[in-house]
Image (cartoon, rainbow, N blue to C red; front, side, top):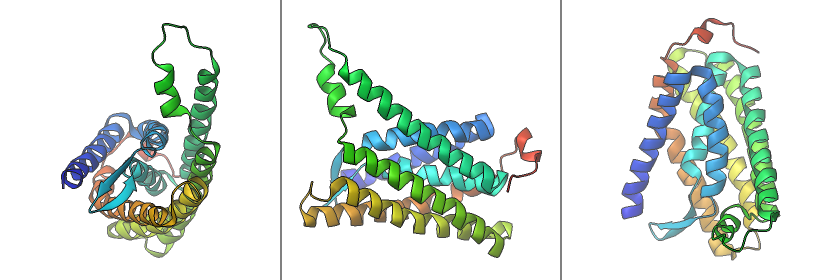
Length: 232
């Protein structure tokens, strides 16, 4: 049960840090959060843990906050700005992958002790990188479009939870399917793959639902750029 209780505390820390980032730095903070979260999520995903007898990967909580950030941008600054944030995160992921793969190519000095550790962390399989990039771009764009459509149909301020959860839960299902298929089919046995797929989506589903109060809190924060007309 340790992983469950520690995981709940871990999620709370992620949400609090997200709110702090937006409170202190406004819209710029949301862009910075998306950049950091895309990197951290893809580092954490290589670690598997067990919870309730099921195998799952880490990275789902911090990855879920990316949807929280883009939904908040969509809510307060418009669909155009949300799409820009998606591309910003996509570029960050590509940039990190290219630079760190080149770093690994340098021949280490005989006194170096960190090359094996860097290889273990950043030596991603090509399919893992492709899976991350494809899943991120497709699901995030889908999330932005769904949120915008739901915003037209459920436009009242108190219906934010419908816009947030409706768009995120659908897009994260697509994200999980794409990533797990590209990254893990053939790597794990089918029973482990199904466990990873199921637990990954369930965790994302729970994180999305748990994030609802935090997006309402974040929406209440006021910054100078909030006075600008949202992009469409």
